[in-house]
Image (cartoon, rainbow, N blue to C red; front, side, top):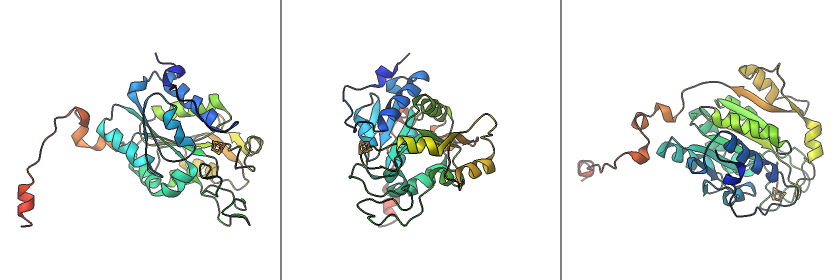
Length: 284
Ligand code: SF4
């Protein structure tokens, strides 16, 4: 049985003191270990951002991809070997700006991967610019008079785009977050865990205390099978942000509907060299 330590590389994180990534990192490792997954059975695909520097910190198969593109690479990995546990890991700028297109289509496609988004409401690696989830009025170097855009709502977008598992956690509550990540990995299909994260260096508005005041946990009376209830929780207008599993349903996954990989993973199938000459001939 693997432990958190087995998922820890010798590379020490360089995040700023107090960064929420220090909560998300152990929560993810704990989830993997408690599920009995071994490091060689898991793959994490990262985008670009402070969070994605975690690619060096985990001891498992990891791939540091390009901005906004963790999802298509992760889906490709899953299709090549669907026996692997595959996670994609992005920040809010990475995943909800450059990667929005991939996000929406991954929700409707329902590939069996887990998407962790470190949502600190800021482009932080590039030193504090407004991101899609920044609150209206947020002042940064790119919006010195305050952002005039309404913030992007990732959990509501996931719901209406067809995601079969939608959850929201907080980087400051590691046990609760680890449990959400565990359930997201166990879910068959696309699972989003939007993680409200503090950025101690650039986001002076959405601090640890701010999140404590603006979040609440979904309790036992909440029904995650109720889509309309989930949409209501995701779109509350009083500024309160729900923590927990907002929605979960069952639908055939993308990978299990592909006949070519029903028998065994692509990586174990012989490479067949197709004769392309007839196709070329038709153009000659
Ligand atoms: Fe974390 Fe913000 Fe520092 Fe990046 S800039 S490492 S998100 S505290």
